[in-house]
Length: 217
Image (cartoon, rainbow, N blue to C red):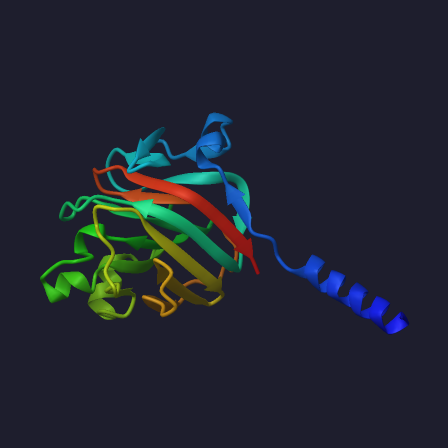
């Protein structure tokens, strides 16, 4: 009996020690002013393809919608994303380990490249970058096809897709639509290890986010 009781207590302790996933109702957070928008950003709640979404639009360049008061170190970020299948107009992702709008890491997607017939464009589907020193242009020039990859199987660029970003500093792995093989595996280009986390968008087309969930390690 004592052994059974001891095993029960051990199991309970292990269960309590496991990190818990936290789900974020982005629309509710927006209404409660728990999301901090950049100066050139605007957001609204919409329903698209039968899913309620937080829509982020940036007027010129890239922009952020920070989760107010939240920090992220190591763990897993999961989110549903929807961009636009318009060449060079739609970039959508998650920024993390951020200090501000210049110092941040980001994993983002180019939906218009998901199913491109051009093999060069197709390998530019998912990207890791780190501001301010390692933008996509420098990474593509100095490390072509390392910090950006194709996604196989390629998602429909006009539909929602699910992204899972696993951060175990300095390693980052990105999985799409439940695939057990990562689409992108890289090492971070900075050593902060923790920082702000938020939604990221670039280009003139709006970006849609839903079902954000973060599980700390």
